[in-house]
Length: 445
Image (cartoon, rainbow, N blue to C red; front, side, top):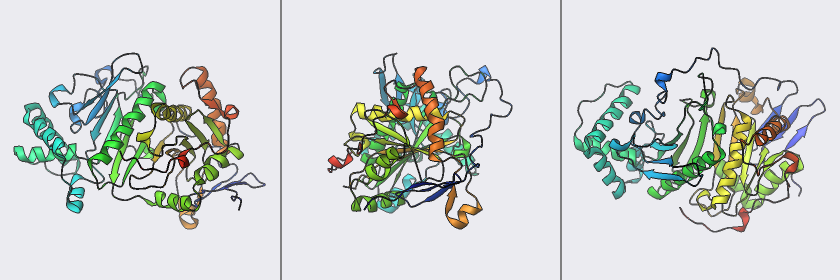
């Protein structure tokens, strides 16, 4: 049986779409898409030199305002290979180097350490318990922990507790070191050349080399969360950019949340895979190529304008034979990072976006490709959608493609994205580019 049409263009120009994996129905009604994606920041303010590096808690002058650090990446030279990862920096050493990226526990976890302990009997691994004890044993570490606990209490509308005992501080530090909800944030709040507060440092403003490090560091963190807690079934990775997309701070950061469920998205994908192991090739990448929706590709990944999404969405698929990010080669990981970086850069820093990673859960044997959805949060779900479950998306896949392709050509000419990205008609668009079905084994983190 041939696949149905997932994208249908009506005579008046209305584009109707069906998501091939979720069944979500989306319409783009003619003439409703001519809206600006974003509005210029009202009354931008000149940057205050006195606040440089201290605009929010993720900035480099405010490391003491976040929970104890799990890891950081430091750029040690101009050579892209000269990046070093440092683990569990002591409180006395937090300002010794400036981190390109830091991994810290989320102060307000979705699933706390207590959740895992109460429901599964999870205990802090011995090495993390030792690090927590050593952290609090230093006067600087003790002071840091007391300040963080007081800040959390205030943010929750509670009175800060009195002086905590050493045992209480060690337990609190252990919960942070054993957290299953982490944040990975970049160094800069604003671009290096910024003169006012509208010029934020976004994922697209990173260099391709720095963005590769950002992605690799995130994959390492995901792997570590799986290794540390045997009860974790899935690690959700996402990035909210700007407040309309759910970001609490306009500072570039990703979040990783370890959970004990697969989630509905995976269950739907499993149903499709059991019927047709090649479903991601046939219903996603091949279909996009046949409909001329491929935006760009390189040897390791392909990006296309997605269909059947509530928001305009760019889908980036890894071509790797390895379903799991931690089993990708450095080239495969870098290739996906380059393509994702290019999509961020072409989107621009003023558009609110969600970046969602879709990966195979650690306890699944079914092969599926690693894929990233970049969603433009430029519309609001309202009464019509709630009543009909038909979603109105103001930008159809073809318009999304046509907005991005000229930007990509310009960025490549300027040397701001990876030079080996093949754009639009340069892409080969060969059928079945995803190699995930060749590897049916499970290789745990």
